[in-house]
Amino acid sequence: MRKTLMGLLAGVSASALAAGHPFFAAGWKSGGPAIYDAAFKKQWQLESADELTDGWVLPDGGIVYSFSTRKEGIAGVVRLDPEKNKRWEYRVAPGHDNHSCQPLPHGGFLLGECGKEALWMVEIDRDGKPLKRVKVADAPLDLHHAFRAVRKTPQGTYLGTLMKGAGKLKGGHAYEWDANGTLLRTFPSGSFHAVRLPNGNTLVSEGSGTDGRVMTEYAPDDSIAWALTGEDLEAAGLLVGMVCGFQRLPNGHTVVSNVKHGKNPLGARNGASPKAFEVTPNKKIVWKVPASASPHNMGSIQLLDDRGNPSNAGDLR
Image 1 (tube, rainbow, N blue to C red):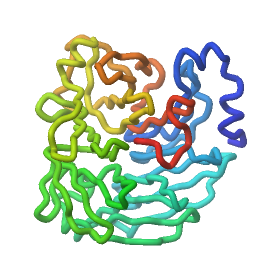
Image 2: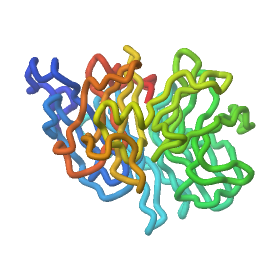
Image 3: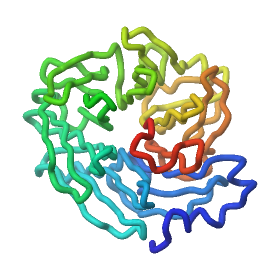
């Protein structure tokens, strides 16, 4: 655990790097945060049975990840230093939940805290100390199935999707709030994750699917600018259970997670089920993490090469 990220990847051959991406993975039933080289060989892992929905490799080579343990009612964020030793741990209130740890420009992180009485956007600083707490919704129907990954936009607003409802807000939608928690926008769909793109559109993951879509990019007027559908997956020979995390790359490609969950997978009935895959805007599959790479899920994935703008708080994921 004393090797830095650069040290872990130094032994990867040039041919392997050219063929694919080194990447970081976490997520639900991921077995713990892990780093893989471009040949899908695991370089490092911190074994954990917790629910680690969101995770990032940071610019200094350290790692931050969210954690949730439902039985114990403990949740929060852990930050590791570049040598992969624990630097600090932040916990939300006892009995509350959290599934987010987005790096922010001020050096801190964004959490989506879920309690029985309300939902909050919470910002902490680089040392795990509270900075800001904003209520955005009333009591959730199920605090463990409210927010997953939440995100702050470049405009200073907050994005979050609700798996199930909260107060007057329905589940199965992404929402946007201003810096004070005032609701600005309700998106037509969204089950797990939403990110604001540089073009002003918003990309959402649809979990196990919405109207035959697993990913939807909404324009500001809520029209669909781009989508990844079951028909697209079938044409590509893929079968997808649940899309949780994703990463939109600078070249316009999208890296999509494929979590083994849900009763109605979309795509080709006997198709391949990679852990994750990279798809072009015209739906061509150009890279896949094979199912054989790990027995675990990779619901949160971050590319660690130039094509993924590595370790950047502005990564679109």
